[in-house]
Image 1 (cartoon, rainbow, N blue to C red):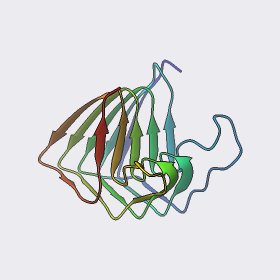
Image 2 (image 1 turned 60 degrees about the vertical axis):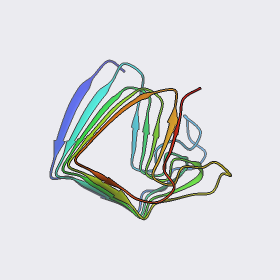
Image 3 (image 1 turned 180 degrees about the vertical axis):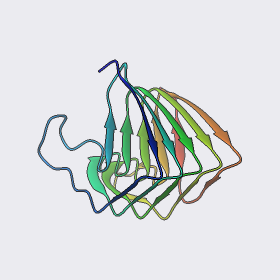
Image 4 (image 1 turned 30 degrees about the horizontal axis):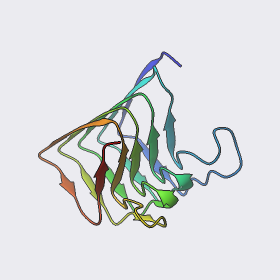
Length: 130
């Protein structure tokens, strides 16, 4: 918590999160409240979790020139489950799946803030502000 990290040219594939604390959140990456992560030129694919198949964000997340593809959430947010601050620049979020009725295969937003700039976000993306 309360940390800032930057990853450049990073690849995370085939991660599986089950039964750990927090309970199955973030197949590749979990960002806690108060933490910040910037991903540059990175790929997250084939990861799976209950919520946030690729990324579960409760902090601040910035994506620059990244690809999230083929990630799976059993409930919400195949690519990303966002609950805080999310900025997406020049990135592609496509081909992710979510199992919940209102699952949001691309991005599922739980009362967070999203800025989407020059990016592609395919499939049933849900922006839900509660």
